[in-house]
Length: 169
Image 1 (spheres, rainbow, N blue to C red):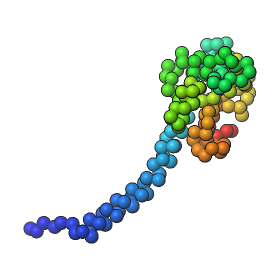
Image 2 (cartoon, rainbow, N blue to C red; image 1 turned 90 degrees about the vertical axis):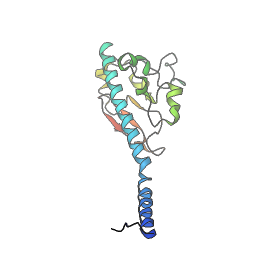
Image 3 (cartoon, rainbow, N blue to C red; image 1 turned 180 degrees about the vertical axis):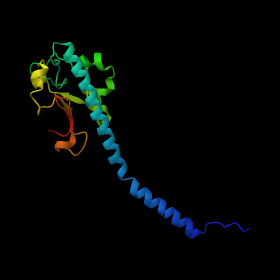
Image 4 (spheres, rainbow, N blue to C red; image 1 turned 30 degrees about the vertical axis):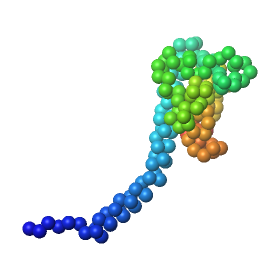
């Protein structure tokens, strides 16, 4: 029986097909990675919400007093810690406060978290009162980590009722 080898034309056709497949797959990779990172970030928000609920339960149903932007606190928040500090007792994993899309962990390193606590509205507030503010986020990404700068859906948001959204309500 005679052995049959691939001809040069057949080999070139296989190479062309493989190159075309690579060209089709590569552009989708960053988009898939971005969606994956957003999903992890939203999961972080849900787990932080659980820690927040336990914290309020342990503290007379009051939200914590935390700085919204620790490196540049607004008036009245100068001596307050970032949101991870009171919640670490309940969450144990500091990485929950780092968004995987935070470039180089810039905000996480500088602020102690990739997420901005809405201390102006929620510091010390009773949970029952917070639940009335259904359109006001408790926590959001510090920056447009998940899309084009300036677009509303480029940040994730956590609301007092525990809902996490990709963009504001």
